[in-house]
Amino acid sequence: MNLQAKLMMSALCIGALPLAQAADFEDFGKVVRVVPQVEQINRPRQECRTEYVQVQAPPQQRSAGGSIVGGIAGALLGSQVGGGNGRTAAAAAGAIAGAVVGDRVDNQNNYQGGMQEQAVKQCRQVDHWESRNNGYQVTYDYRGRNYTSIMSYDPGERIRLRVSIEPAQQ
Image (cartoon, rainbow, N blue to C red; front, side, top):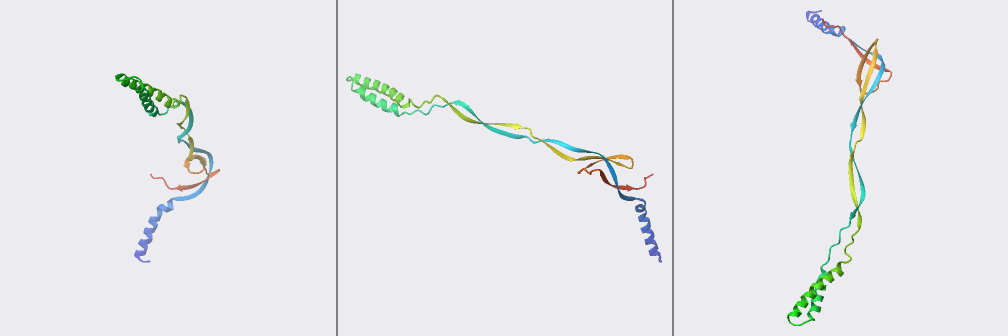
């Protein structure tokens, strides 16, 4: 064997020494306890409902038509009474009286004056709690010692372990 091959073989052996000293293998441990890691989360919601309440009915809009017609009729009737300046005063008084009477006759049915139902939307915020699983705290026994790990699943009665053995540093 030539010198170069011997050097190469020596380098490979020296490089493999740490690997020869470390050993990885799989084994099983006995599950002692599993505790779900549950978190409570509040997701508030808005709940709304419609309620009906009694409110004062608003008056309907008044009409001016009765006042105008009554005023004209009153002025015509007033101008038929009296003479001279008295006729003008009678026409003015007739116009005022006619306007008042015409307004009352025209608008007497416009005021309802009662109560009516009105829909009112009532909303409130309600807490809604949900549980969320964040994994499992698993305690297991391996060769007489207990160990604890957080896992994403419940392993059951046995847990598969990767065991790594290597020399301690001095």
